[in-house]
Image (cartoon, rainbow, N blue to C red; front, side, top):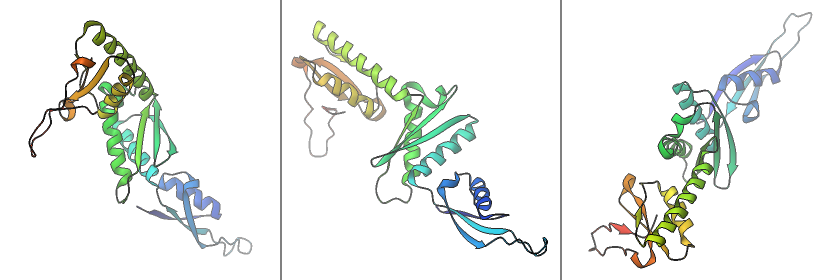
Amino acid sequence: MQKEVIQNAKTVELAVELGAKELGVDVEKVAYEVMQQPTKGFLGIGAAEAIVKVIYNPTMADKARDFLVKVLENMGIEAQTSVTEEDGGCLIEIKGEGLGLLIGRHGDVLDSLQYLATLAANKGNKGYYRVSIDIEGYREKRREALVQLARRMAEKAVKYNRSFALEPMSPYERRIIHSECHDIPGVATYSVGDDADRKVIICPENKMKKPEKTGKKGKKNNEVRA
């Protein structure tokens, strides 16, 4: 949604700067219309300030970042945010001290923030704009931890010829497990459960569980997917 303010100052440049500050954005992100040029007058008599309309049209990345900044402010958390544009979306990185509350258990709070920021960015948008959020490099650290977990459990599955169920994970995390186990000889994976309770089973190939057959209106309880 477009935002605008009318600002006056001794120069057009200063008026634009003050207007951007009032809108809470960097001056590089605003456009402006000069409604009145400044005049010096004669001996100070008849001098007039510049009057400028400062306009801010937030991009989808701006909308996502503005949403996160507002959440941080409401929670009383001091942190810095930076935005990197990507193909079809953006990555917003949050840095600061004591941000564990924003990450949650295995990133559940972070995933929720990412979901809400995505909704904020896509409001009124006909297409889909992807928003990714990371906090102090958590995503990469978690990915590496899941890779190591997948390798350990795959080794156990082969060694003991038995299946192992992992804890419930998000679709993104389950894909990491499936991908890592895909090229390990003698190992197979599949997912069971619904929604927040969905988890990955790592098993020997000879114990791979096939999807259950159901009627036309039935629901498969076990599917070989994330």
